[in-house]
Structures are given as structure tokens and as C-alpha cells.
Length: 86
Image (cartoon, rainbow, N blue to C red):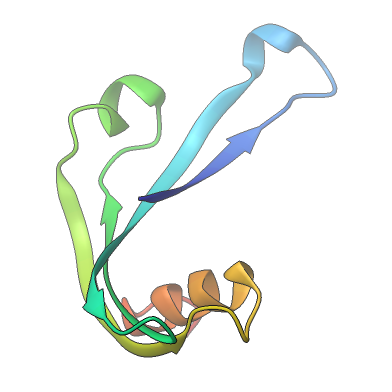
């Protein structure tokens, strides 16, 4: 599973550091070259809330070229499929 965590590293105070968002991307099938991935974003704006693993949005990315593209391309596809960036 790929875990994408968005974290704030405060320049003002380390006590203000916090996790703002989390996306989980799980391999659910495909072939050696093309993969299918279930993607979910979790509800919350703190580590404690995100750790509850309440799904906010979900999507399926199909036929992603596993080795031919950088992992960040998979992350971008997952975010678009879940409706982010519009």
C-alpha cells in the first residue's frame, strides 16, 4: 500500500506541525505491467482524525503502467479520479 501524507512543517513553531490529509493507494490487481489500484482519501485534518480511517472519497485507477511511469503519476491519477484539483 502507498500512503500519501500531507504534513505542515511550521516555520514558526515545531508544536504547530501537523498532518493535514492522507490518501491510501492499494494494489487490487492487474498484470506485471499494468496495475489496478483502489484509492481512498480519509476524512480529517489531524493525525488523530485521520487515524480513524473514515473514508471521504474513493476511486479506482485502472491499467496504470507500473514500471513505465513515476509513482507520483499514480498519485496524480488517484487525486483526479477522486475529484480533487477541479
